[in-house]
Image (cartoon, rainbow, N blue to C red; front, side, top):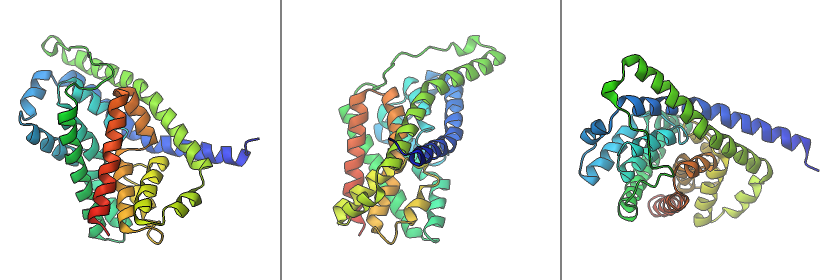
Length: 293
């Protein structure tokens, strides 16, 4: 019979994940609605550079100034791709926004005792991973990889301002219910695994350099922390794991966790999501082992 205390703990974790994520989801769907109504395909075509490299770099720069978590960025990314943004640039934006924005980097600085080294490691490895992933995607996938490729075409010139505002909120509400169910499923899975998976077992496994990095990445995936707060959790492992393992935790968890995996599976084709996850895992593991002792 399932322990009542364990169920209560699972419920607490589940609610805390939802409370932590919902503000960013709401912001994300609102911006998605704004993009759908106020940004035309022609505007996107003018803004995004034609050069593939420049389009990815401009997407990363946009991500730096965009305050969003790994869940709230998903509906925005979907809308951008549907509007014609290249897949590699949109994914670069999606991966960079939750980890390279100033709030996340500043929280990392504070969490590690005003240490710039961890900020540079986290930002540098994340930037390199985004470039690698964008490069791979630009060659491997030639279509937008959305599950629903068709989107409603908005005739912007025919709508009054009131019509646009109404349409914006309508699309935001539809987007919220579309991605919200995946957030709930993901949060529930994350809470269950955190409750019933013994962290002590992972700590025992992760004593080697390679295993330590892999275990911390797995732990970040399971814990599904918001990127604005994960540095404070990572800093609590300083006496147990190496700086390399801590950076692996901070980079991988901000790009992929249980709750945003479920959301991505609801947005993109399954093969694409699995490939993306594998590429990020290998890139983060390899770069942290190679450049951080």
